Image (tube, rainbow, N blue to C red; front, side, top):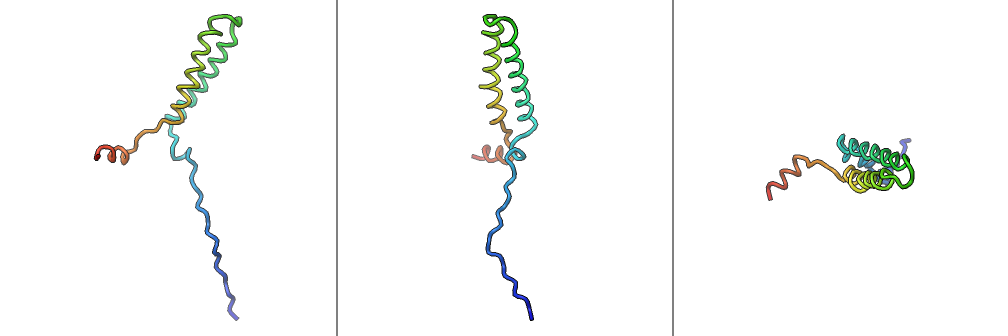
Length: 92
């Protein structure tokens, strides 16, 4: 007797690659590391001296602002244009 093999009707889900492998490049990681270094420097500047020193009240908030508001968003959003995107923009 021949065996009857039932075919599975369930669809196999395709595994999507991680966006970090597609999107993030070396420049994104370097910017992220720069942001982390600025955070460490900012919190260190906040800790030195008394609570009303210039480092605690002026320098540290400026460094932390640059890290949080400028460096981290740029590290996340920065992407070089690929050649195909550049060609599409030039044709229109």
